[in-house]
Image (cartoon, rainbow, N blue to C red; front, top):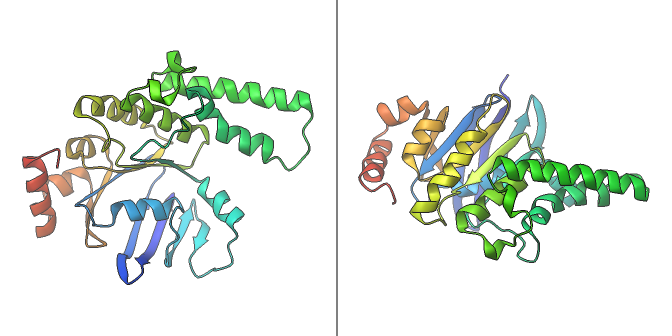
Length: 266
């Protein structure tokens, strides 16, 4: 049984059909790279998986348990927020809170969930204990992404690469089942791209499942266990990196890769 199953996902905006029946599976610990031209549906798929957009049709399962079925129209906002906790999201544009320090950016969501969202009334001592645990966890994550010396800095004092690494630490803090990246280097200068890709590469472990929408072909080829090439809202080709990059079957895939490898920054 696959760890993640995405079945028959459709999404339209008005009369524009963006996703036209997306199906794939991932095993626990696998890294999936999603590639394709602008407008192919990559980001919309990533946002649907993370419940930032609600699919019009389709089913999601994690570890055999159905967590979303678009036919059920009765999901409350709270239920959708709870489902979103299965997926961590790292955006193109960092989305850090400028008024908070690096440490607070990483710890805030944990506090909201464990303290403000607690179903029981917590004593002052219990809150202090939870905050100490959150603080230690947040510092550990910032050390993991190489930012242990920036805990008291504000986002405006960081480079774009450092801001993106804070965003990665923030996503990891919620202990998601699956970590999603939507073009994590597209807002960065070329010299800062490497540091972020290095962190993502180091996150690959046997129990951390990741989905990476990327235009970095060499990165996708070297890190991914599975690659999806999307075109016109469908999965045009899916396979291992060797299959998709080394022996593509689709003419659309071949044309895209030829253009991308000629101009890797495109």
